[in-house]
Amino acid sequence: MMKYQLAPSILAADAAHLLHDVEAAAAGGAAVLHIDVMDGHFVPNLSYGPHTVAALSGQTALPLDVHLMVEHPHTLLEAFLSAGANSVSIHAETGTPETLRPLLTCIQAGGARCAVAIKPLTPLTAVLPYLDLVDTVLLMTVEPGYGGQAFLPDSLPRIESLRTLLERSGRAVDLQIDGGVTLQNVSDCLRAGANVIVAGSAVFGAPDIRAAAAQFVSLF
Image (cartoon, rainbow, N blue to C red):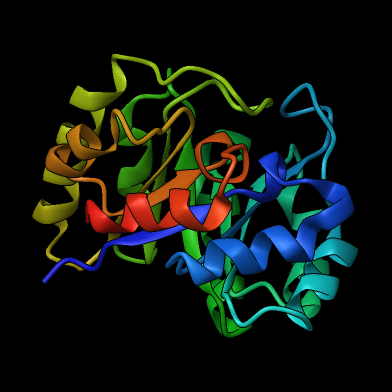
């Protein structure tokens, strides 16, 4: 049976009250905490480093899901694993199977779950060289770099097609989506085949974070 999980992104949380917001999301049923790491090169923004992961690792029981939106993931991987990342996503656009498969294997050897991620315009076939290895495929449903964007309508057929690819692989691979997911469109995403939902503004931007998380979980 497919396991459904809410993974709120701290990109939309109040940095001055981060732990408070995280605890509220957990109380509402969030299962994973999503941490978007941006380097200002692969995407036009900067965000968190390993120190944020290390700090959260000692304060929350939620698994920490690190999404490396960075040009050179190999330069940061060990630091995030050492900081306490429980899962790490690497973008297929940052390398080739020859360069990225060893990194995915390194993530698993470090005791974490590994994922390959793709941008909205990247062909779904880009994930095929990794399906025998990864635990998760992360499909971006906005162009990565900034929170608060609207869900791209072309994403629904991509979710459906990607779910078909994953089922054909014969392995139980999670399909995670990230970007513009709201209470208004999440049911369509679930029906299309997504089972791990990253939501930023719709959870951490809500007046009641716990209630917003609980509303998402009630739809799973």
